[in-house]
Image 1 (cartoon, rainbow, N blue to C red):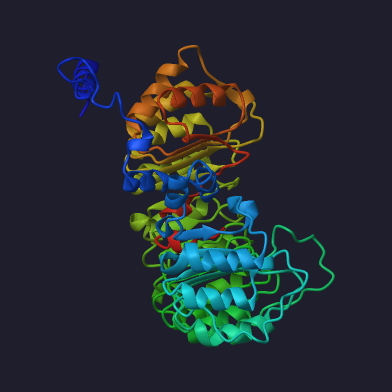
Image 2: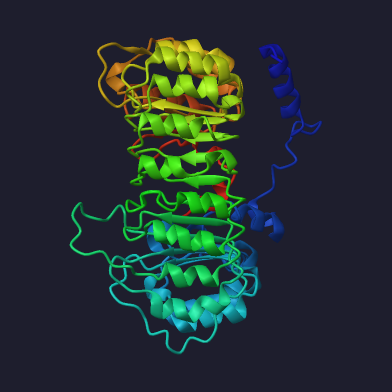
Length: 514
């Protein structure tokens, strides 16, 4: 329901009067932060980062006592590049674990220099409620000696291990196998972003076949960018983890899908399968019994699957709520047509077709006209022929949309009239939470009256928490508009932020790492 400006002004006036007494003085006139009770300051500190809390501890003795309250140290990252916190010595860390962390600690991140058997012993004995742990071995050139390690946190439900390129982990892993059988979420993060194109030799730095025997209760497995992971490792996990509901092997280039048939047959609860950037082969994918599986969320972006294979899979999956199939040459108009005629897109909630150059705007318009009202995420970026004209046509249909990614960084022959686009988004997409416009700033055309369109977007889309634009004049205009309304964290640049349809995944919170 639209509320006129007069009503809003009246509400603002009445609200302001609450802060004044009859003599015109504010009841908070003589109040300072020193007069606030400890529990209020503690609540204020809870909104600060740990680095800022440490600075607050230097103000006075009272603030130091509050800053060291264990309630503020439930989730701790000791990786300097992430949190800014640097622990100078093991002795200092051992004291922190005993005095500051204690039973309140739930989550901790440790860099390689702090991962020792004494630290792990102390965490085990002093932090009985520790359930989430990240161990960063990515910069390791050698491991500490774990031969004397006899204890390890035994209540872990989530564990993330950042692997090294050359350090073999088995000596450490053998010591913890007996303590991690309660794990439900496992992340093994490889060195994908650090690898060179031609590897001389690939080392299997962790024994997955032994690891799977020690973790029978896994629900979510994320193997990200690991150069030695292949189909045999997927087969190993599927043979032992009967509760598996989400498997992600993004950027594991040795995965071809040869054990996909066995995976779907064994893992009856598997609902989410993410295989972005793998080396899937069409013949292996077509062998799998998609018509009998429980998969509802599928990512096959950046693969070389054929048109025939895509049609076969999409027309056989009974219920598909999330599809990411961008950067595939075989994804063309005939795939969309076959899916609409022989498949079941009626359950689809998220569609990511980034950089699908063989799709025409006519085919996309037909598909979204039919199913757009149910979509919560729509990514049609990276295509020069998808301009504001298509978006202006389909936007009134996307009434339930939460995530939109549009535009391309390539220079276009025509221009994008961004004022009209913003006005249309604000008018129809009121549930929008994340929006990214990737168009080159030189292609964006806006007038002196663009503030009105930005105001409409800001006022109508009250759930909008992230608006990503390329740096330029229009970015500065939008950023200033939101900052004047005290919404300083909404507008961001593409250099530091990207919007993804992954937020719609049912296991999104479990898949987050780093």
